Image (cartoon, one colour):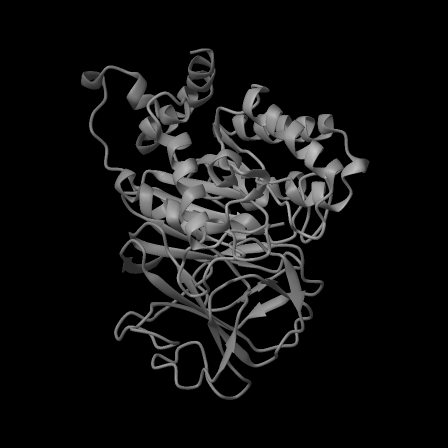
Length: 422
């Protein structure tokens, strides 16, 4: 009850004044539908630029709407990035072809191209394009110049396409020029939709959230499975996982504490945060960290989310016995960290993924039925088990996060991202 009261104190100030006053005193006013994040990936590295190339990224939306806008990133770049053209389209049956009649040009303050400073993101204008839930969207980015290191997400687990220099442009609808494939997402890091969605849940973590171990090109990461389970609640799910990411220090990408705002709290329509992060710190150098450091980091993440009115679900760290980096010392740290997640009182709800996937015959290991073979990540069945556990924590009848779900349709869209951010 105390957590419900505390969360209401955080969330109620975000309600529009009209909801706090008697209905008869407030004349009905038309409102613009809010923006909600429908898809996300977090920048994780850079690759060499390909001047003149067009990258056709395939992304899988969680919720639908009547219009879209796309977030593009030069966050890890070192030189200004000129985007000569950006288009969006619903994907056809397969491959790089757009569904006929759906290709649209994205603009930026009304202009068809934009230059993004190094270390910054940009967000397009609204693109009128109705998109259904669970649609594949093509986000094509044409880069005419050598703009230095290209910001990308390495572990896409999704085939995207590339038209080499001179072979095609972003407005190519049939996709025949896109003769090369890529397993990375280039430049694009988010898609927002405008419409009836109640908000989005941000899944924040490492490779276990990024999807390693799941079947490529099938959208079976646990955030994708969670999106299926939350569709009836009109909640989107954003995947802010980075394979190799760490909680306490930089690894692949900045640490969780360093990237929290850009990859989670600043996303449009964020209504809840799910934190599943820390195993990479443990399996790296467990002796260097006292469990108190994890507790402090989790408390900091939660406090920063609460300051935005966003409740937080903590996910227990799952077993990795049999993985080459497993040690008894690391296992002891994992158990102590999990004890804090379960009973330390930092989180608004707990998703006990450890209990859901561990092998009762050997709790240091995940169940063989969930193990893709490396003893650390999850196969498709394991991803589904994690999704079910998180869903129960989010909307179970006795969890305070249900308060956020209940009020989410009425929250103001205070998290709309400006056109260009540093």
